[in-house]
Length: 445
Image (spheres, rainbow, N blue to C red):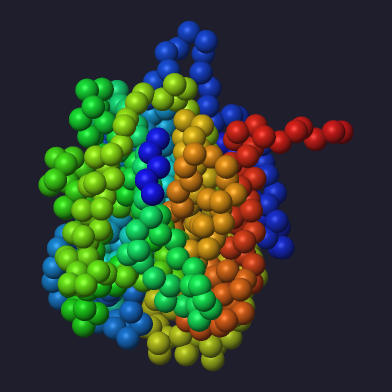
């Protein structure tokens, strides 16, 4: 079936959000004309020198050996009313680190007035490690090229965002979703096995109705490239985007969904990154062609960032545990990981409402599909999209029932966050959405 159509929050030790009020995210004078504009730009973010590769522990610290296909940062900047939103898809395994996000947010707000940012990694397992830093034992000295890449990456992302902001032009928007059977649950043993079959397309046109950019949202692990190949690749999302861009003469941005327990489920004869990506791309093309775009009646952007503090199910101060992780991955990467999470996990939730009818929710980790499914069911807005690996990365966020099943993705080594953290974050996203829509009565005091 096809359907077409600032506030900062901190939390206490129990993961409960503590909100700090700020000015409303949208302000518009009575005489100002409603404005809806979009701009697109991209940057090549492929490392130019050999670096450790992200995604498979068995590679340890082996360096990359070349490039299968280039990696990009693709940015869509939306001006709706008097505020701006940047949506960025990265051909990387994860979203930017916290220090990177701080730099990016500061620069794009100062230079382009962009206060809302959603930056997601596609989760390709053929991208570079980006966590290494310029400190002895944490990257410096042994992996200087990887450190240099990580220091350069925020600037490249900023360049894409700021160029997109300079290219803003009057635009139209349309959204369509379709259920496809191209992913499968790789974790649960329960029947029926949960999946998120929703393929979503957001089409941005210029004033004449020509596509300017297509945003695609789908949940499936990009692990279709042979892990023994130590070459950079965007995996199936790269082929998907190339297919769409060629067929529709436009630009395409892929935003990964809640794919923590989602693998690809290719049709017969459609195995491998190119065949699967192009097959999924053909579904996107058909869906995009079905979309009727229009100028929003009341363009607006409102957003909120929630940062949580959750306890860890792993004692990251335990040296023996650190040695085990170092053996499974490599010491420099593990030291950065352990230092970040030693006092607990601090994931980020970003909630944005565009034009009053499109909710965009991003979580900084690998969320299981039922987190997104339940959020969509409960949000009661025409369209709700979930972006995983967004604005950071804090490993797996399984559902409570998935933790009870145990197994990879739900056990502490790869899911150190306390049980129920994902549910609390999705509840907060739902509260944010209803607050944006003015659905709650004011407190009585």
